[in-house]
Length: 191
Image 1 (cartoon, one colour):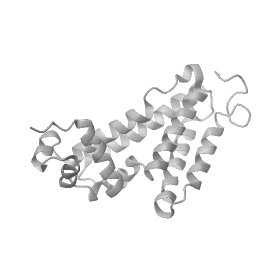
Image 2: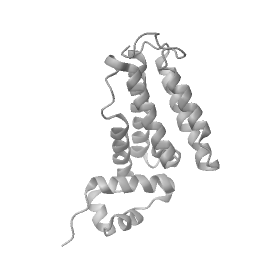
Image 3: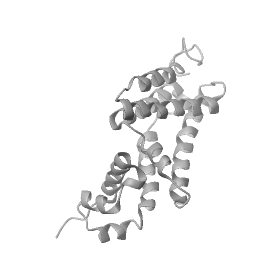
């Protein structure tokens, strides 16, 4: 008798399919094949491809935000950690699964659309919390701009194989936590 495929493994593989093919190009049949299940067995776990979107984005959000340093104690470390995780994911995977899914969402997939919106709102809110802890002016605007620059840089990675725009966006984002050049206070490392 075969061992059951853990749900997390299915979600991880679904994420890779969405990254590779987008929402429209990914299929439940292909996912079932990749994880070694019959399609009908996959459908007993996930009723549709749309149902997988929220699971994929929840896993991605968990990996991005889990165990960040406490911004109240060290907002700079929290900011650097978060930006570093985003950079690592975007650079190693050549695209953001959330952004890739956002382009594939249509009015016929409202649950998936809402999952994508919630994903980006959660990342933005985490950024805002960190920037507020650092007493950075206009934290909401800076969070949105930073997220847009990081995500937008994946266009150049995907189309040109050029990660330099991502590196520049990361450098700009990290300057916020630089006590000398950034917008932060010029005090010790725990401010």
